[in-house]
Image (cartoon, rainbow, N blue to C red; front, side, top):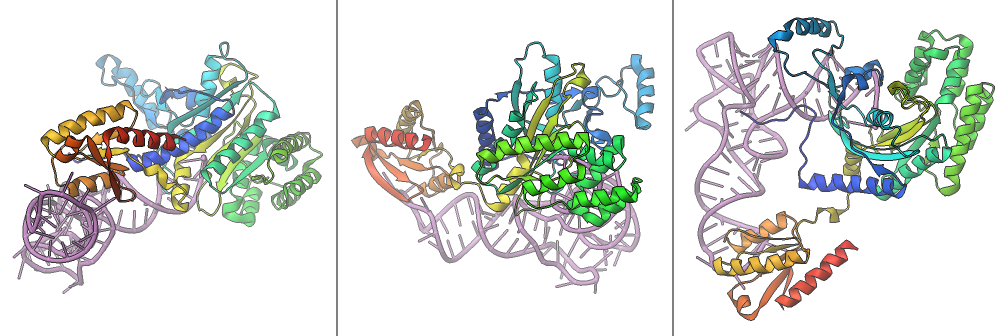
Length: 462
RNA sequence: GUGGUUGUAGCUCAGUUGGUUAGAGCAUCAGAUUGUGAUUCUGAGGGUCGUGGGUUCGAGCCCCAUCAUCCACCCCA
């Protein structure tokens, strides 16, 4: 049998993993800096926990898990009926009742609802785990990918909304990725929908507006007209879509357009408040007001965020927002939440394309002890164990081979030093320490070897 | 889910209107060189041409299906 892995899934070798860990370590460090604590949830959730949370399209993309024991003769009748339901496009508990998680927000909501009594509110957690979507893979889209989420449950404070913008800003500046952090407020979009006479049908308008960048103003107007908007409404929509300028200018313009609407006023007020918090603390704020930012997920109620990498063609590399009824669907009403997500895999792709990974990431083991023969390598093994006691990562070339080959092996493995202890050095209690990066070497006493390597280790840790 | 692209050695790729035994570079291994990363030279191994069918005297090449890849749509991180 020829080995293979399922479509849209990937293995990660050492080089890539070191780069990925660099990204997640950076994100995690910032999450911790802002006072979030870790959480992990299972790869699978009960199917009913997930369905209906991501819209009709989202439901189709949930990876479902087939129940075991479908061939049980005692259950043949219900199984057959279940299959019938599946064929009709319905879900059936007798066939599938579990699914792989689709994002980290809903499992978080589920966790908060299940542990509401025990959690200290506001509860701030971060979570870095893979999620799965049955999408067709393409550029920047995978079937298994990592999200790095931070959310807070149990506070209406705009400090938290503002903090998430700061987290985005901090992380991307540490990673040296140029980004635009877009911010908007759902209440403003709701006001627009209301003013256009749509009210409850807001979701369809939201999806159209979201596509502005891609399909252009003309198409957006066309599609909105198809929703049944009056001419006057379309006029308002066009004015709305064309709002531009600085953040302050945009806010002023939208106030003029939708300031009479109660929801609109509230949204503008929130946005103003959050923005002032951010701008007072960043000289050059990467946060940009974008009223055309919509986001498809329908649980958002206030602030929404999306992060776009500059100079690269790539979908959003992060997104999030406020949802004022986080746990309502799980029986605990009145718990607000805000949160953001980083798309690790897309961030990776962007950094790869812009060549932003530091080269120092690819440093392997510190030392390779070269094999100089049977007696010599036995001796070297002992020295090596001493080094390991000192916390220095090292390995011994197991086989007796030509030095040429051993050195090439070390270079490929990105090992920093080679140590040669042949019969001569054994006699004199010395070693040849070879810096493979610099292509230089010196003969030193074994005791000195420990000293040099310990210093080297400390300098790398700083 | 819809549409398109590509698939030949470990890697990157040639391969003529369908015609003998499918090639190159790099990499690997062995030797020139039994204590040192380069260069050079010599030699070797490695392919059921993604998989399964079909057309044909004959298929890497044409047809169908299937799997994977990349890309666009939908949607999204």
